[in-house]
Image (tube, rainbow, N blue to C red; front, top):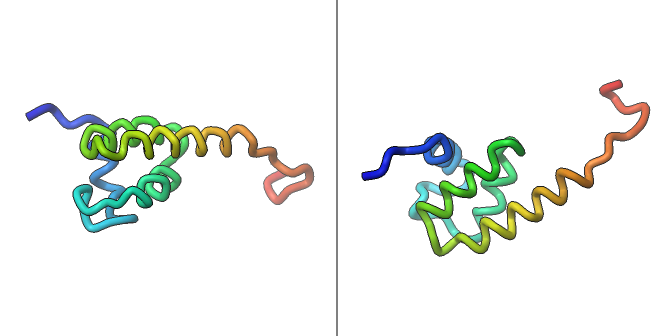
Amino acid sequence: MAKKTKGDHLLQDMVPLVADSVKQMRRCDVYRLLDCADFDDQAMLGAAISRQRPEFKSEVEESLCDLEADHHSFVPMEGGAFE
């Protein structure tokens, strides 16, 4: 058996947010799970999903593209609560 990666551990920790187990994840859970992860961890988490559920590979790729576009289109408002 292959050594578990950081992404595998992250997937194991986060999957309860969307399903009872990785095996019980549905295609619609992929985006929701990736969206819950920190932006810097999304690609690693996506790779773990693709390894453990190869049938979701295209959903992972599409979700990561959407999340990256959302991340780069975010523009903080001037005079916001954090200034």
